[in-house]
Length: 248
Ligand code: FES
Image (cartoon, rainbow, N blue to C red; front, top):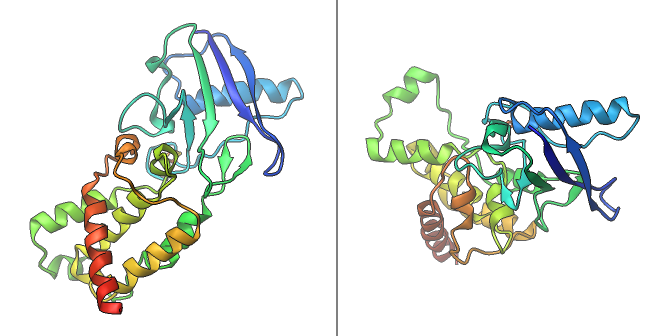
């Protein structure tokens, strides 16, 4: 298939970026979106040009590294799919495709399509962990957890921290990411000792990093490749209110 690409090129964090047009012939519909970019980069390198910088690691939909806005949609047009799992068969021969980095104040562009997502790391450092010794797998299995809670915790734990929720949100909010972590840890007994300090610390780190607040537009959940639901934000708000009252 033939494709016309318009890709955001920005040489460094301080440079002014712009969309640059490229054309590709003979793209396999079985190629992933990242493999299609690999083909473009091989051509650019062969021509002595600068390859397009983009993030990736696992290419299996589990690491959360790949972070492209494709035709205005984080991770592109296929629901519940990361960019690395998106295949070119989703597009048509002759299509024009715009490719941009995540657009959010808390995720500054480093180069081309690569953004700095260390703000998410700071939120995790502020409380996204447990310190209780959990022993080995048999010990974990010995802790009784209601199935409903275990299932909800597991669903929240599916968050891969890609940042699509932030890129989709008109407020640039990281609430869905943060709420998934708070729900995941707050639903299991091992997460209870730090439950209050966790939510207070993570919300403070979120706000300090410059993420916006949630106004319930739901764009985050619609863009999430792991289908994390808005219910986790409700849980975060309940936990935060309780923790703030007790801390007052
Ligand atoms: S490269 Fe790991 S989720 Fe896409």
